[in-house]
Length: 364
Image (cartoon, helix red, strand yellow):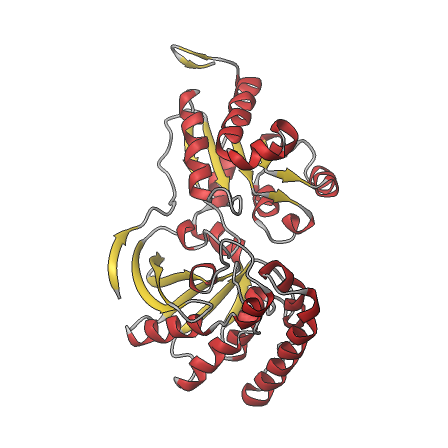
């Protein structure tokens, strides 16, 4: 392990001396801004209006998962999805009396900046995940929390599995925190997002079925009907076969950052993600944050784009919530070109509408 750096994960904030506190709990806007970048911009607006920002970068297991936890980073070099060595940050996080290493498949075998051609997408391997776990075990780490989301792979976790089997199996306790509840064979449904040509989905099906049979034959675990096993192209299922525990990525972040306590104490909670759609209410960040806010009229959801059906479902589930689409407000081009600027304008407008203008004596 090399390259120790100070982490910036969120922790439980100090009391705000009676000032109005705004909890800022964004997920990333994929391809345009990270959760930390969005949170920092909104926090500046909150401060400008005389309120106290409480930053809690969120993740459901994919991009940004490691950064959601307080701690310090070390760097380990492993193979990326296409076999090239690259540095992977791992966060050393204290969970009560236990020290946990936090990493995410998005940073180990993550998606490229653009969809690769079909033949490359099929070649993407999860070997780097196995390499990282072996390295952590040899370094004396006893517990790992692995975010499973944002991977470039659809290999059913076979690359990861073969590395670990070759090393004698899992030598440490692994909890896999997933961004979806999909079962193992349903990993096929996400292959297109990773650049797999529709004509090659039959090959993905075959690989997943072969991997499932192998895991059952060699480990005695049938991952076919196991919830969350399809996360990260099936990496979650491969690790479950080897003895890992599967859980919700959002719930892990919410617990570690004391999100429920912070939401209960906030005057306003602001959250959002790149696109609000049906999946947003099924274990993703926006749905999770909405569920922990005691009063929906204190919740502002700002997303890059908003599907009509998802807006309706969120409003029905949480009457009083306010939902804003940046595309609807400034247009699709402007929303993608400057999402942080558009987001800042929306939050400033909302603060004025809710609490009035800032005076020299502070907020009214």
